[in-house]
Length: 468
Image 1 (cartoon, one colour):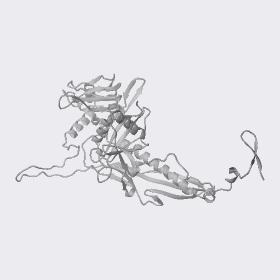
Image 2: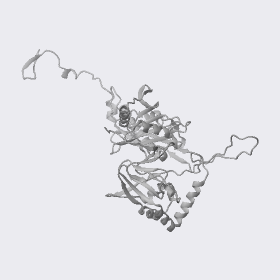
Image 3: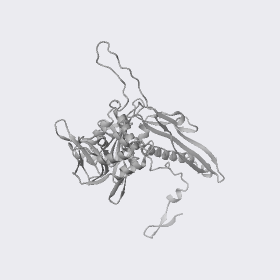
Image 4: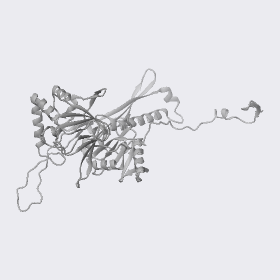
């Protein structure tokens, strides 16, 4: 029997067969598994070599080094007035480990704020070096003479950088370079006379400075390590030097970090709604994906072991002009020159680098990484990672690393073989059913990362993206 139905214009027509709305009530639909937008390629997790850590602690033993690491200084500002935080002066090699906060406050109060326009000279080569300069804002180029007398950029400094504490220790020395403002710059200057006035009033600072000078005079190799005495090129039977390899007495220890959550599923859902897909399995699959995303985020950003915070300050460089250029990438390669494994950058930073290459008529090659074609520079793959942050100023960083324990590179740390493990160092543990019939599972993953020697990781900082 025909059933009358109305068309879009209101007219009636006779329906001669079963409609789709009714038919679908008897049909089994084809469904997709639950999708999640936050899942990324997670190249860092795939490419890092993972080292088994028994007992949850990894101790990093190194040769004894006499180098005092250069740190970055932080500032406070009220309106246009900028001041250095007194405790942050301990980031200067000269004041590393100095304990008297009152003396540091006295030093901080003697810094003079000076503002410069692009192109202004902050310090000039050949003139007396009689101060230390802290860069509070902006970008500064250190310019020196090349072999044939031409001017060349030796280094680019940015916020938090400083030069040159050595000037406070010597008299009648001269600047070996010219410091020139590339952008508007705010700098804090401490004259040598002001520093010496504070030293004269503080016996504790006098002792600290003398101890620093003594450490600086200790013999060291080109990497700042305690030397291994050797002899070569000799003839006859000279007395050979005796030697031994000294180690750090307080090596750094890495404790495995953890990312966890409690997955909750109502027993009614788990019992009744498992065809054609198991609800518990799908809930667990997406939870594990989210934990892995957090794991990669922590490996990049965690302040204790994250790669962005554990690169040596001498391994951090600044872009020369703003956006990442081929010149900047070459300079980054020079910081990790021993068997570099891969670059790691935000996809938008990779796009900015590609735009700079196109502007110069350069077309980077692509290489095959596990069946995926990825861009490369000088044969080193550039891998995307959306966990590297982009600042409000639209700047980001590019990492370059050497990986592997045998290469003294960057390694991931985990502990395989934990109870209820479904993947190495990732476990799902049944926690029980509560009085509301909700089933709970504890999902945990344990991990960390270590940079075995400083030159295994380099970072190009403040790379601008989105510039036309």
